[in-house]
Image 1: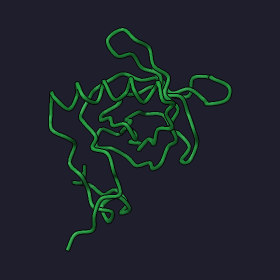
Image 2: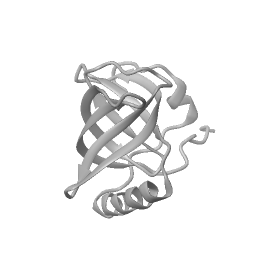
Image 3: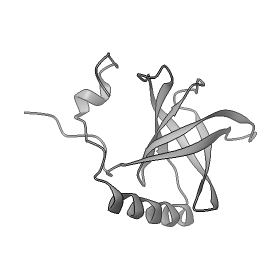
Length: 131
């Protein structure tokens, strides 16, 4: 019997350019793309290396409104395109959560949620052929 997913909130596909900034200093640390999004987190794809467990601000715009969401890198792994993939866990304020909820509702109506993985899939190291 497959183990349940650790993810509580469904993530929805997106393709948003994002800048990653150090949480305390605000200096730019990386740039990349958000590949899926939920109220709890996102999948970030970028060529730059980020620290696992480190908190950053993820800056992007939605319909002309700039956002800077605080989030921690929960996991890291390579992607097929040679860039790295990062699982981001958000730590949102009430106002940020309300705004992100609106984005997620728009994404949800546009596409089905990203496939859920089992806890085993989540913890296994990346290997070729896995997405």
